[in-house]
Image (tube, rainbow, N blue to C red):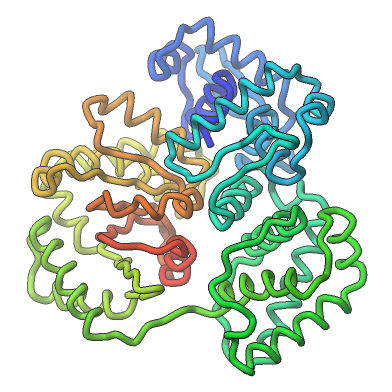
Amino acid sequence: MELLLEKQLNRQLTLLQLIHIKEYKPKTIAHMLNISEKTVLSDIADFNESYSASSIHMNNDKNLSLHIHDNHTVESAVEEILQSSFSLYLLKLVLTKEPTLKQTCQLTFFSEPTVRRTILKINKWFVYKKYQMKITIEDRLKVVGDENLIQEFLCILLTELYGKEDFKNFSLIYSTCFDLYCYYKKQTHIDLQEIDFIEFSLRFVSLVIRIGLKKKLELTKEFSQLTSEKKLLFNQLSDFLYSKNIFRIFLEKEFNFQFKPENIFSLFIEIDRFYFPKKNQETSSNQLLIEDIIQVTSQAIPLKEEEITLIRTNLNETLLVEKKISYICVDFTHIYYKHLTNLYPQLPKLLEFLLPCLPKNLNKKQHWHYQISITLINYSQVLQEKLLPRFPNKKILILCEKNQFNFLTAQIKYNIPEINEVIICTHHKLKLEYQFINQFNLILLDIPLQDSNITAPTLLLSNFTSENFWRSIKENLG
């Protein structure tokens, strides 16, 4: 979303991420962002005037620091900046309401030429990101294209813009989704996969909004093709949702969602896909893929026999196949760190140097999180020098937390400007990038590991992926 933001908002967002990690002087920030020091000070003044979640202070030594106000977090500070963006507001308005051009001007208090210019900017961004959708201006402003992609994009946009405290009637939506989960479990007598109910609630809302606008998703099955058990479950689901009177009235009034069989069926398909993992038992093809991955890994990193055995075991446990598209997610942390240290001897010293620079109120896990995030930058250099020559014409993708995106981007541009083969992406945005993921050979994840008290990067080697990529990674790695 960053490229959609207005220039000043994008600078302010980057500024927030940088000084949240450590103190910087305005001159250093100006150099990192390639702007004047006067612009930095102007952005800070506007920041302190515009936002309530946080403020930027300058001490006597002219060091900038971020102060998060009571009952707020860095996430809420980021969301506040995003919510002030006209481009994102207009995009959300078109996706959720489909107003006329005149209504849009009245709602936003912007002129028609300004609205048209912003729409042109958004459409150019869609082309740049290779998303198969665009905003059209006819009788109403509409986003047209692949409806499944549009619904996924709306879910991500809502996730970016709102915390659960900001979203209208979120507690009602959340509790109903949880009740649905428990109802499914009771009716099917199956141990359902654990899910993120906040993510699913926003996904549920996104689908309801699009159905309310009379958009028809490309469903994977028609009702007539469902098994008798699934048909019975669908009918029970319809009765269950209809019995939730307050929730039903809320959906009808807020999102114009009509409780018709075809609309309930669309919800049913989404819920069924989200609750039940899809597995494929084609073990022979899985084994071929596993050996292929091990061969690629061995070319990049010298491995001992016991390490290869461990990798093979991990691959067998984490390999998922869905819709004949396979991908691998493996924890190589304890293996490659040793080799990384050999390739880049300054790495341990770098970690020691970083500790004093980190905020003192961080716990051990957060200390490691920031250390490893910065380590990824230096690892990028190792990859470029040692590994990229083995994979010509390929790129590296670094996945990071949402509140690390601008920090990593600025640090890489400032510290290692010669690297141009590294692409940084946040976890939830990857859902929109999955169709282009196979251009990458090496993917680094900065995520918490299961049953671990620290955060460490995870190396992922893959030539294939699926649209449920990040959700499945969370299922496998915690």
